[in-house]
Picture 1 (cartoon, rainbow, N blue to C red):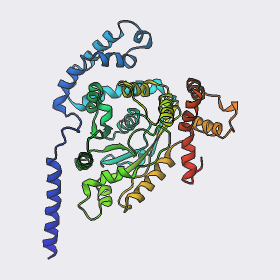
Picture 2 (picture 1 turned 135 degrees about the vertical axis):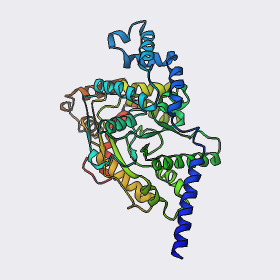
Picture 3 (picture 1 turned 90 degrees about the vertical axis):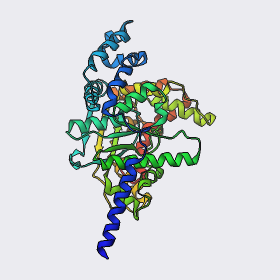
Picture 4 (picture 1 turned 120 degrees about the vertical axis):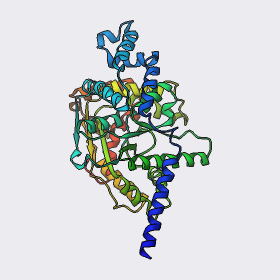
Length: 395
């Protein structure tokens, strides 16, 4: 009897695994090695890429010259001439990204890497402030530590631009489908995403996904329970879906702290418009502009904290969301700009706060805002302190 039960159980596991393998992941998966040469050939012909990349590829005195885009294209053509795999592409990107981090931050620090086993796969879930920087910083720090980089979830709203779609899918990003016509189509898309995450972890490939849909434009980092429900869909036919999710790849909360958010004024304009008009019409190039600004804009101190993995000790969506909130918010560093904004909103700030490059950058951002937008910008920085207090932590 025991042998029969065990056999049935094993057969069921094999059935589920085979079902995952045959699902159609092509519309959402990252590019594979055999696709790299063709995608690169398309990219190096893009005038839009040449214009966007000139600030990353060229010294400042050349990036502003009339021939900058032409020279950038030539450099990119030379740089990618021998690239044949996704790893080759990531190696090139990491070189430029290291230069970018060095030029746009005062310091990049990390803690908690000792919690990670390089031989294991993980499901990384973090707060979400920047479209590209968040997951790229996590992958950079994993790469530096000799740990395999992860596949990264991106919303399909970011991939309407073919250039952005190519670049992100080359860089191990997969698509989370959101802009769908019906609830039925939405459920089918969520199920596919959930199975793809499960499939990736079963391939011993780590995955990163944000704790909520879209950036936390108000700076208030909390996990959306809908995310956990979506991730658990691939395990819904099993007795304990949450425990099965956690056993497939230990869940690691990650906390990202930026002293200055280069996109804060743009977020404040959007939030003010939503509060005033009830809607906000995003420009055609706005997401791409935000990606570039987030990459090249000054960020002050940046810190990334990896919390200890959560594995098999949560039974419900609510319990797991609480554990994530506690770990992510607890791992965020409260920096000078956060304390100043929190004090300013409480009418307790003084000029003595403004004594650093980061604080000067925040003051410039405030000067760029209208009076209506100013409060929304300050809340982005102050809400880190508010969030910590609400969770019973020292702000």
